[in-house]
Image 1 (cartoon, rainbow, N blue to C red):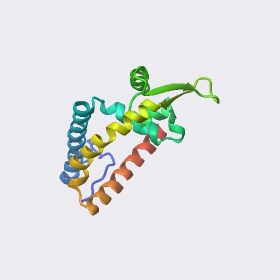
Image 2 (cartoon, rainbow, N blue to C red):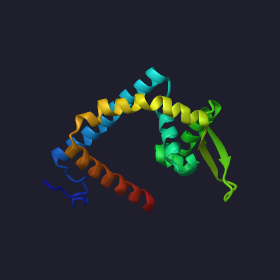
Image 3 (cartoon, helix red, strand yellow):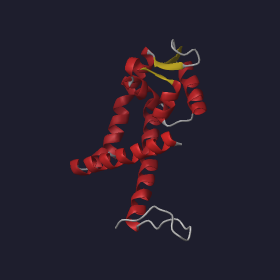
Image 4 (cartoon, one colour):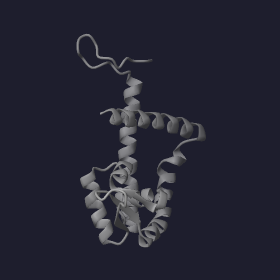
Length: 165
């Protein structure tokens, strides 16, 4: 059943089909619960906060193992101020360092250190085991493909809305 998202003549919000609201609520609950489980496993088994792990992954995957602070904030879905505090703590632990941007004196990069890389290497097996156990093993190949396409389309739409704002 398709539903319209256009405002109704009465000014009331549009009616959303029950199965679509169930998908929304299921997404929210699954995300919250799985994220909590993964965070607890990383904290308990390897003493690393999930947000720190996310920063290390983003920097490891970035060109030159560094990102501008605003790019890193967008990648890890944190506010600029929230990321600044997080990077402060990670820098104090030797996992990342800040470097000045040669092209823009106001710009700053967060860069993965050797110790940060080693921490990521050491903690990845715990996180990846959790992702497999609590997410990917629960989907067959077709479900994973459909879910990936749908979530990519939703994320792309949100990025376009953000860009227009």
